[in-house]
Length: 290
Image (cartoon, rainbow, N blue to C red):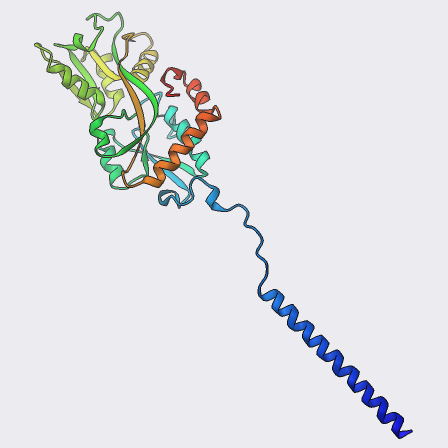
């Protein structure tokens, strides 16, 4: 009886030890498995975004410097601080492609390039014609084409049909625009010089014409045409536009990643038709660069 009991107890101990060892080994295998898990493929990686790796867009915002007084390209809705216009709609479409918000900062045109260089905003989008002089300071991404228009009083009493016809006349123009350069260049050909008066904003120049204090206003053709429409018949646009050239989105020369991202985003909205739709919304299809 004691021998059988001793044998049984020994057998039970062997079974328990074997079970414990098996359990311990199984635990070791499970711990090893969880220590080095197989990594699942990443989804929604930011590297798929056009904004990925662009320092200026790391805060999720594209900041745009613009002189918001140049309808219909960029202007405030009447009685509000809501920016609208061709440039605003195109910038918002580009921002959507980039996956970022777009914020416009109203900036005087005459100092807008120095403000960009001082990093007050990321880009310029402000009806800025690309010129060799400006290209020495910043880079450009072309997006629209416009020439210069001449705005005169209704009936065109001075029979102004060209820039040469401005010789001897009083002309109002916005400071810092390409039209100032054009008038100065024309003056070199004039025996009777053009009297050029500059203003901080285009509407102030137009006001001088409306009051009879100027014979003409020169501005970008779409802008001059819009001013004529808003004048209730007091002003008219000379039919021909002069020296058509592309507008450009201004980018600091060191912002190479941002330049590439915006260029791609602009191409995307051209390819998907949104660019054409926006131009049509503002009746500016003639300025398409496609």
